[in-house]
Image 1 (tube, rainbow, N blue to C red):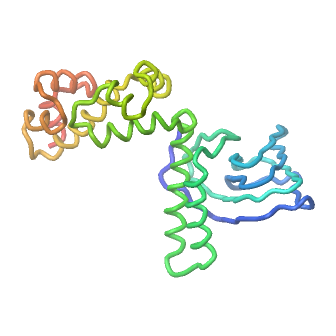
Image 2 (image 1 turned 90 degrees about the vertical axis):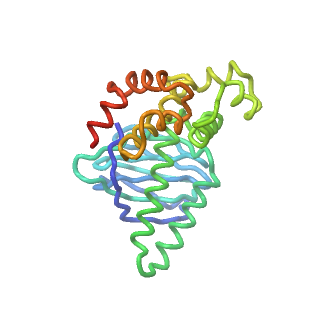
Image 3 (image 1 turned 180 degrees about the vertical axis):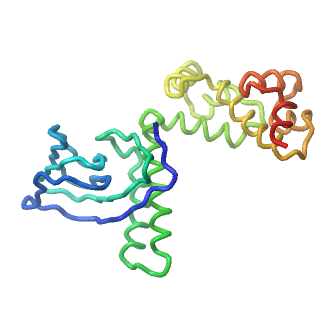
Length: 249
């Protein structure tokens, strides 16, 4: 389980590693992320060997012992710490599915880290948090499946409208059956279930505000039938809309 509130970046470098570059049996008191931009390298982490190349991300846990060598590599390396009790689950080796997005964040970090103008620490921490979120989000979504991300983004932006699998498949120019199966395999739920989840989460926020009655909340979240809304809300939240609203006031 990933339980991270705000990671603390302590070091950033973009570097060219020549064949003379080596790390030998170094135990690290921090977490390390290595993003390979060009070339390749071989790492041994706690006795296990890993080969990484362009587009790969290497994650080394705090307290690990690392050894490394290369025939030539350009990479970005970021060291960071987490608060006591926090944990993060990232594969030891994964891939950058959208290089341009990662490169944009690297450029932002490099610019702020090197010039060190007033407030640079806060900006660097914020950009790194975005980068780490992207990395976690990417691994949490079956390696960043673009179709699934597009479906989720469309639902979140249009949840008040009528949304069907056929509509989404047409927008993505993919087969309807494939569209539904792909989403369920990645998310563990159907597209309709995800739509209901988004609508009910929004409904809960509106009920917490105390500004709307139940019929208005149903309408504002895309439900045409208030009874269907109430039944769906109870099924997902284990409370009726009125019970939930009372518990928040």
